[in-house]
Amino acid sequence: MTQDRTEMSEDDDDNSQSPPLDLRSAAIADHCSSSSSSTPNKSRNCMALNSQTFPDHVLENVLENVLQFLDSRCDRNAASLVCKSWWRVEALTRSEVFIGNCYALSPTRLTQRFKRVKSLLLKGKPRFADFNLMPPDWGANFAPWVSTMAKAYPWLEKVDLKRMFVTDDDLALLADSFPGFKELILVCCEGFGTSGIAIVANKCRKLKVLDLIESEVTDDGVDWISCFPEGVTSLESLAFDCVEAPINFEALEGLVGRSPFLKKLRLNRLVSLEELHRLLLGAPQLTSLGTGSFSHDNAPQSEQEPDYAAAFRACKSVVCLSGFRDLMPEYLPSILPVCSNLTSLNFSYANISPDMFKPIIHNCHRLQVFWALDSICDEGLQAVAATCKELRELRIFPFDPREESEGPVSELGLQAISEGCRNLESILYFCQRMTNAAVIAMSENCPELTVFRLCIMGRHRPDHVTGKPMDEGFGAIVKNCKKLTRLAISGLLTDQAFRYMGEHGKLIRTLSVAFAGDSDMALRHVLEGCPRLQKLEIRDSPFGDVALRCGMHRYYNMRFVWMSACPLSKGCCKDVARAMPNLVVEVIGSDDDDDNRDYVETLYMYRSLDGPRNDVPKFVTIL
Image (cartoon, rainbow, N blue to C red):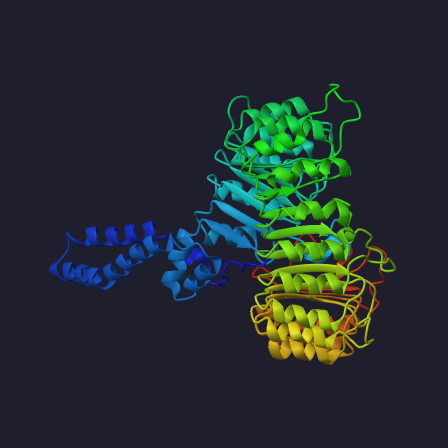
């Protein structure tokens, strides 16, 4: 449902009531031509009609020529709400549509309103599905969307899906229905295999982008790389690092060699370092590289080991580097020739020690995006702070995600980053211990933050120095970071932290809460004080029926509310559903749940223009 980026404007009036501009102008022309041979009075009526309607028609033509240059979704949404005429013209000129929740409207409504769509970005399951908090087979099927678009948009060029259930049949229909199809991006999707990818590769002859990112791809034993057409291709981006299936390397090497426009290549762990060397020699134009496995082949093909550093040195255009799976430390220095040009570096799959890491990061002065495992320790983060003065985004993931583990990063690393990287705009930081002082320092040193996600693993952990709740730290973030739009909170937090959010978090759109708060009053502070709130994710917190009811005035303006392991009753959820008929209220349990049980395991609420969905599994009850 989002990032971020707000849904298509939702107007309850059916677009079919107002014909497209070409039909409307034709109707006017027919009316006037039929009147020209009639009485003078009728002729005067036609002239009067022209004088009244022609200026509006001209205005709509002018508006259409202007709106086609408007790219921002927010600006387009605002334009569509000016009046009915603007709503109609904006729909006719919109070629890209973003839908943050696949159940917020039906595919039919999409095609009725927008007639000229070339690009669709569609999101399915909520984000907590990434943490196994949603049962499998919940839904978010792509099938109804692709079947509807196949009839309405034969000119479709791009599909970007996130957390959707996509089958091989869906991919086959996509490949058969859109002859000019160019871009397929599947992020965190499931349900398909290498057979479906092979069909897309074979039939979409104008394909420029095929990105499979963190998706579950079934190995059907199909050599999908060999299915790309022979001859020069249009490929600009190919990412398959999530495909856990052997690759026909000779076919891949040939594909890369005949793809002169290829700029982005992300390999899976079954592509060895020796094979990477061969690919780099044939693709010096790459700007974004995912290395796959960063270890040598168990059966080297020659006695002399390739010069990996020379291969990287030849790729002078590389600015984004990732991969490094199965890393062998002795080969890491081979990337040094490209480090000075890097703006993005992703070590989130590499278990790297500070001693291995520091010689690399000391050469990355232009870095703006950096992801890594916490194995780099506070020492590594201090090296980042000393070198990467232009850093905009930082993500630190746990090597060992268990709550009882001893995390190697702490408040020391966070404070170093805040002091050295003052242009930071987004941070995701997993740790085992933290202090209010370090978080306050970040709020003061990095006022440009728009995203702050601090995940203190282990439940209800206080400031490990003072033993106090983390209220003042998170309070400082919402007070001092005036541009903050996304916040994830953790650690020991009382209702006071939520009071700070309600008072100062006026731009917060996404709030994620885990194991926090004292009472229902905490959630009330947020729902009454954060006017821009769109997405609310809560788990294992003491917010019950009173808290849920206090947001009744807000839910129609929010994209979704997710609450799991909270003390909610089914009776209260029914009351909300009755009071808000355009809100879909789903109670998610398991197949063996007792229907008479009043306790709600998981609540998922979202607005919808077309009512409840028709693909409800047994473990979901729509109230």
